[in-house]
Image 1 (cartoon, rainbow, N blue to C red):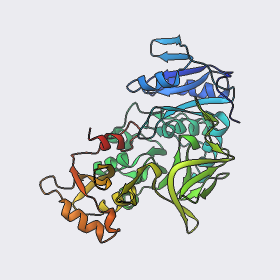
Image 2: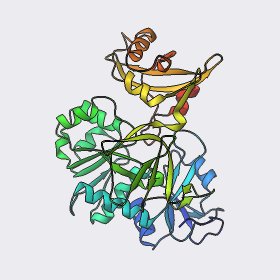
Image 3: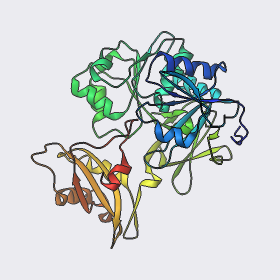
Length: 383
């Protein structure tokens, strides 16, 4: 399916628009083939993506203007700007067929029949927010679109289905919201902190965890089980491989990322009891003293400590060890924060000794990217 984007057939229009009706209409036209391919971008974070992905048109609230970038292959309907937690934005080219295959499989798995409205409170510039719009189109319903996340507004939205990241779900629980009003809460974007799923389900929520990426048209594994048509396998080095009709057509500029029919993710995982368990990211492996430490595994253990409210783990250069394991912690009680000695003892009871953190940094909150994921690049540089 992938073709060299230096031979374009379709204009690419950047939608530098707030979430709302106009953006939804442009996405619908792109999927139907009645409009140009679209590159949804947040007005607050558009600069780097515009420079890197060079659309051929730019639409803002003031109208449409021409730009100097090439178009995209005719089958491409949407380009999503993604760089994970680091790096220059890449343009993930998605066809209407891939997006619709993902949305249709999602609706079938959730048994979400016609009439149930979806709430979009995630940025449509990210695939998770975009897919809320696609599901609405396939389900024949008008999406409820919020321009930003507000826990009170979400709780009172009247939507049947909502897609959230863990931080948003946590805020709803803090508010004391009745999550039983939703038929479905799709949860993705990051691993939930310990106890979050149990607390949400105890409040009446039907939470379905998702795994996927922009390259897989969003979530393609629900509660550890792949959606219809999606295949999974684990490579010898532990990386998760995905195949199926939901895969990207290619990147905006660059070579095809597919290995035959498989997309090689940056995530490490294992198949256990027939389901997928995501261990962490390959680029988050910390090499310390000749040993490899999966940062997410250490964070998962430290999150169990009663004096830890939130935590991320990163590697930083160290003159003796190569990299040091650094725990960045939000204390449960800022007046009584955990000490490095306490956290090392806690982790060494559950992990190899070399995985115990060597540095501790206390913060009031973890920095987040616009899609709700932890900004690991900021944590690594200390910004």
